[in-house]
Amino acid sequence: MGIIQWIILIGILAFVLRKFMPVKGLSQITVPELKKKFNDKNVQFVDVRTPQEYQANHRKPFKNIPLSQLAQQMNKLDKNKEVVVICQSGMRSLKAAKILKKQGFKNVTNVKGGMSAWV
Image (cartoon, rainbow, N blue to C red; front, top):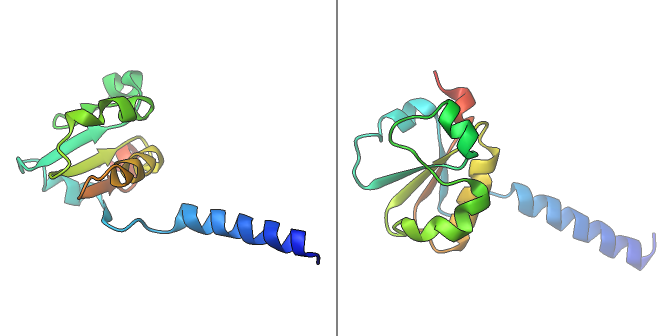
């Protein structure tokens, strides 16, 4: 194998590993664990689904900030308070959680399984 192929292989491997590596300060919780946080005034709840998904089915403490608008609306959130993010399956919310962490949010939590895991 030539040097160029090795470089490409290493680049692809690094990209894949980076996508699946846990982010420092980013935690994941289950829906039952989430329900225990609902009365905590120091927690901000964000649903990153589309407005249509949110309207069809949402939980009361969550406010809707679609993933596509997160960069423009994250100034509505306090960087020093915990932010719990949810979506339909947990994938968009994980992406949102990583974005928030990179923007300096201290304590970000993703809901595993999202709304699909709601019991």
